[in-house]
Image (cartoon, rainbow, N blue to C red; front, side, top):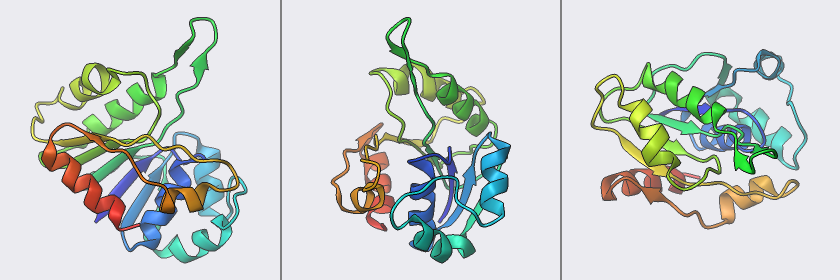
Length: 181
C-alpha cells in the first residue's frame, strides 16, 4: 500500500518507519527542509531506542520529501501545540496538512488523523477542507497517538489503538492498516 505520512516528528517518523518495515511504500513528508535533508543523508533527527535499527531496515520502502504526492492513505501526524494565551491547541499545522492533502486526494482514498486535537476538529475543519475540490467519497478516521519518549516504538506496536471513524467502512480500512504493524 502507498502511504503518505505528513509530519516527521516524534510520532510521524516512527509511524513511517514501522509502516515501511511492514512492507508498505511510505512517503514521509515534512515542511522542515532540514528534517528531510537529514533523513535523506541517512541520519535521524532525534534519538529513540530502536529507531536506528528500524530506520536501517525500513530505508528501501521509505522516502522523505517536502512534497505530498497522491497515495492510497494519508496520515496526519503534525504538532498541535497549546497556545498558552488562549488555552487552546494551535491547529495551523492541521489546516496546512489538510490543504496540501486536498490538492492531491481522489475518491476512495483514506485519511487518518493521528494528531491530538479538540473535539469537532475532524467534522468542522479537516473534512470540509478535504472535500473542497469536490471529492466526496473518502474514508476518514481519527486515531490519536500517545507515546512515552524512550518507549515510543514499543507502545506504537503493542498498545491498543482507539479508532474513531467517519463510518464503519473507514474503521475497517484503518483497522486493517494498523494491524499490519
